[in-house]
Structures are given as structure tokens and as C-alpha cells.
Length: 342
Ligand SMILES: [Zn+2]
Image (cartoon, rainbow, N blue to C red):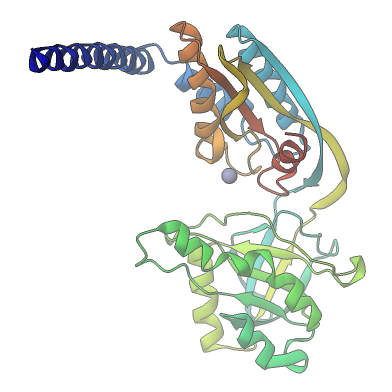
């Protein structure tokens, strides 16, 4: 008898477990079906990347993105949608940069460069100087002030192509872009050229953030990325003629900080509204691309999570919040502001 009771308890346990399992499976399959057939994310991404486009912090496009995303989230009928103000840097590229390699007086080859985010401009007549190529900070330090003063320092350490994690390859090189202008300026360099952070050989220089650390305004020097193809060309031309000169001209500018916003929306949790599950991406992007991948996709996927819950009428037990952060690319001010206040 005892055994029969035990068996019944076990079976009833199995039955309720099975029931829950099939409910979960059904919900998950509804989510998949909805995401694959009725998702708004591709249309959102199309608008964000192609109609709004590049949206660097502090730009008009960044503000357009903020207002548009807020309106879209409001259209989903979330419990609340709001803007969190945050002061962000404003850096403007100005007109396109120009550069050439001068192998002998009057003999030039044009190359592709772009100013790094945060860089100062060159004088309006540009900078023409000899180039010194290095691959590391140690090499730079070894050359010292005497050999660097007045020259353009060319940081040409390539990203390591045999690393499966491309982010590891990026991390192994990105200090050239972020910190080396400050270092080179301390040795009296006239400007800095950095091999574009790119595994491929192509003609597109990639911008990205750089910093002068605590270098005073008057000691700062212009910093630009050079496309990987042109980095190869410059390197081989220096090997043949170490006395060649390089010309660059850029008129980017840093302005005082301006006000922008993180965009936040949420569905309140039915049981634990104070517990928050957060999904998010960053709304800003660099000015030279359309920011579809970095981080438009992250933005629309995060918005879609709330759209799915709302459309399928799933009320989560914990609060489900989407945060679209401003200014990841050149300051992470939005993320810092959110962390400070939550
Ligand atoms: Zn990013």
C-alpha cells in the first residue's frame, strides 16, 4: 500500500512537471514564432542606420535617434518610458581629412586617413614632416626625444590575424590608437599616424576614440588613422627612403560638453517590481559609418525583447527594463550616469 501511495505521488509530481514543461515550451515557441515572423527589429535597424545614420554623441543625429527611439518605445505601450539626462563630449570631424606621401619634392601619392575621435586639428596649412615608424611604445622610448622631435610617429603594429577571438586581436593593438599620441607628444612628435584597427587590408581608415591623458592643451598633437593598405604602402616606402615626408591636414574640433540622454523603458514586474532584468545597447555610433552593427543591432534587439513580452502579453515577475545608453564610443558617459543613479 505504501508503495502504491508513493507511486501515485511520484506520478502526480511527474504530471505537474510535464505540464509546466509543456507550458514553458509553448511560450518559448510563441516567442520564437513572433520574433521570426513579426519582429520590428529589422525595420527599426533600417531606420536607425539608413535614415538617421551615423550618430556621434553631441550631434544632431544622436538627438534624432534619442527622440525616435523614445517615440518607438512609447508606441509599444510599456509601463514607463523616460529620458535620463547626461552631459556628453562633442567632437566634430569637420571637412574630410587629406594626406599624402611625398617621396621626393613635388612627387606625392595620396593616402586615406581619418582623424581619431577627440584629436585636435592640424594647423590650417597642414603638417609636413619626416616619418618614423614604430611598432611599440618600447621602440618609441628607445628612440627618445632626439630622434622623434618634429617627426610624425607612425604606429604600425598590425592586429594579429591568427587569434580566433578578433576582440583579442583588437585589444592587442588598440593602445596604439588610444594612448600613443600622448606618449609621442611627450617626445616632441609633430603628429601621430596609427594603422587602422582592421584585420583586412583595405582602403578604409577606421576612426575610434583616443585620449591625451593629462597632457596640457598646448602640448597636444593631431592623431589620425591610416588605412591598412596605405599603412603597408607607407611602411614599404619608408624602408626604401627613410627621408620621405608625409603631409596631413584635418580640421576636427572639440567643443564643450552638451546635454544628451539615455533612453529607458520598462515593463513592471508583477511580483518583484524592484528586481530589474536589464537589456541594453548603445545608441550612439561613430560618424563615418551608419552604426548598424555597432551598436544598432544591439539597440533594436533590446527593444524587441520588450516588444515580444508586450505583444504576447507576458507579464514578467521581475521588472524588464531596456536601457539605450548614450556615448559608449567616446566617453561611456551614459553608462556611468546610469550606474551612478541605479
Ligand atoms: Zn560600440
